[in-house]
Length: 318
Image (cartoon, rainbow, N blue to C red; front, side, top):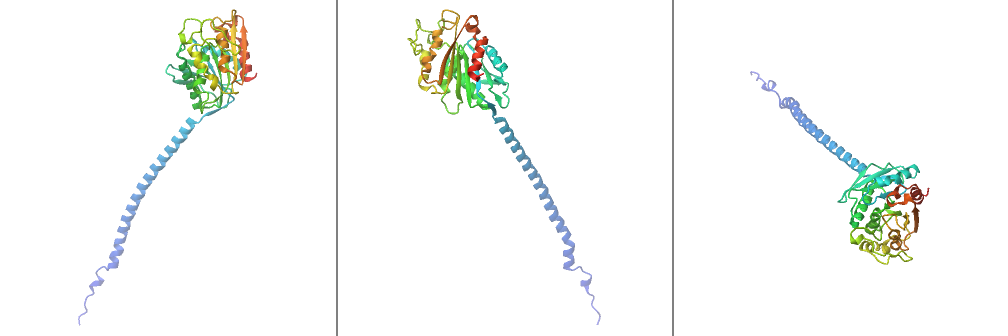
């Protein structure tokens, strides 16, 4: 019988087909896997970049909002009417020369109350000083003075760790202090008020051509407690401090100047001495200092070397 040809020997087996196809399938799978890996790498890289940017932004924000620490109390100087921070420079320079402070800045206050800080207190500044400058230096709305002073304190608080402050006012600058106290002295979050220097303050009014609510009443007299026999509208407002003045907390130095006739040529002594009644018995201490002579004139008081010494001793015990 004729032997039949085995065609299977000439035809590739199924197993051979599978062996031949396997590399193609693996290549496809590898290609897909590689594509996904590349896409994932791009996504991961983007996520890492976004995360890095977020962390950097957070750190920068934290650094920008971190408050700079200071040592001691910050002292704010308020100039008089028609004046500027230049009137404060003599006293501030004396403090620097005495070594009681090592850092001074200025705040500019525009008429709407917005505050701009000029300069920076250094880290751990010793008893830093702020020279306050009002753009509207003839503002006779006393309530606005309180707003200005409050805004200055808050602006300083945003940048520095201020736990306590002192305030020094000359003439109209005293009104900023009084109305700051009416507005903010007992409010939560405001710094402790330690010491106040009132220089030539016209608390009971002025006896020249000014609006009636700040004009000194005629024939003004004070009783033994400093209470005026007559009160204008602004004095009655300030007298509200008698019930809210921080009890046994604030030390007060009331500086008056007399060139003769119980006046400094601008503010009668009786008006300055009426501060006693406003404070009542609530201050930790209250002292009056009188300066006489040509350098005790109202406009010269803030450039008086004897006054400088009194300030330095009272504020910084030196």
